[in-house]
Amino acid sequence: MTDQRVAVFEIKNYMVIWRQLEERDFGGVTARIRGLVRCNGVGADDNEDYRLDVYFLSPDSDVPDPQVDIANRRGAIFMLISDIHAFVDILRNEKPIFGHLRGDYPQWTSVTTTNEPVGTGDEDHRARE
Image (cartoon, rainbow, N blue to C red):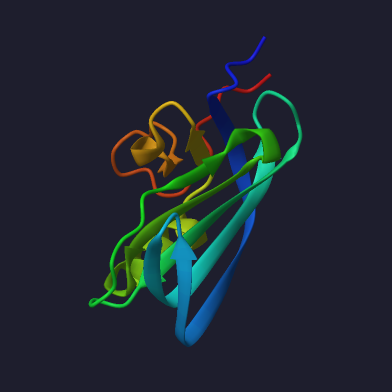
């Protein structure tokens, strides 16, 4: 049985959305959104569809707490707009990439690579079946 407080999924595709400025409420905090990277993928344990939205905020924005809804396989984290290029670069140049939805510790919700040997580039280092 999988832990219903944590979900891991392999990110299979992403979409970048730029905004002039959108103000949206997240749990009573108004975020000033300049960009969004929507990461979609397939669960590591259940083969279900998952989504993690990474919102990139203007420098003058309040920062909401991470949002995690394990039951609906959705999450959201928040970063400054100045981080968007580095984030998209990881998605474009690394494989595999995983999203981690953490209902137990929402602040640990993340996007990660696998454990890779130093200097090997973007080769796939997962164990082969």
